[in-house]
Image 1 (tube, rainbow, N blue to C red):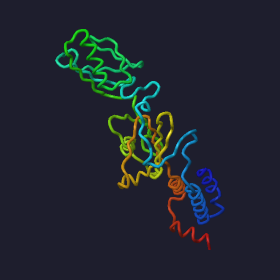
Image 2 (cartoon, rainbow, N blue to C red):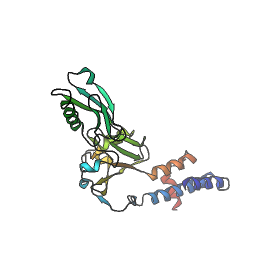
Image 3 (tube, one colour):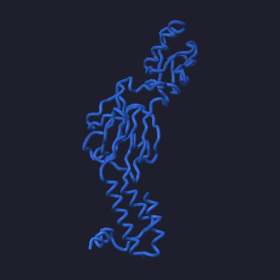
Image 4 (tube, rainbow, N blue to C red):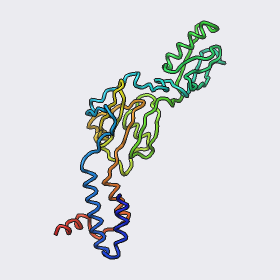
Length: 260
C-alpha cells in the first residue's frame, strides 16, 4: 500500500513541484506511522490460546516435547555415537535412527530407541548385550546430532528457520542462532508460542528489557515458536526516504508548516 501511494505521488510531482511533493510525503508517512503505532497486534487467531504475563508462562511437560512422529530427546534421524568399553569393534560407532525410530547395532540387531533418552538407550543396549554375548558390558551413548528437537524462530530476524535444541536454550540464544534482529525488528513485541498438555499459550517479551537485565532471559523449549515483531514505522519511513532521500529541512519543520 505504501509503495502504491508513493508511485502515485511521484507521478504527480511534476505538477506539484518539489516542495509540494515533500509536504505530501511527510503527511503520508506520519499518517501511516500513526496508524501502525495505534496498538500492538492481536496474537494470532487460533482458538483456545491463552495470553499470559511473561512470568506466568509454564514450562512444558515431557509429553509436550514429543510430536506425533518426533519423540522426546532421541527421535527419527537423530545421530548417536555408541561405545562399548574394551571392545574395539563396538566402540565409536556412529549410528542414525531410522524413520521408524530404530537403530541397528552389532550383536544386538534392530533396537527401537525413539522416545528414550541416551541414558535409557544405554540400558537397553547393555541388557541386550549382557543377555547374549558380553559379560558386564559398559555402554555409553551420546547424542551427536538432533533434528527431531527444534525451535522455530521467524519474523524480523536475519535468518528465520528451525534450530536444534541441545541442552539449555534461552530466548536470547535462540534469536542469536537466527542471526539476530534486523533494522525493522520491534524489540518489545517478541512472542513465544507453546503447547502445554494440549493447551496453547503465548507470552509477550521485551527483548530490550531482557538485554538490560530488567528480568531474566526466559528458557525456550523444543517445539516452541518464537516470533519477532516488525516495526512498521521504520519500514514506512525507509520507503519514504527511498523516494526523497534528502530533505532540505528536518521533518518536524515540514509538519509544523502544515499547521500554519
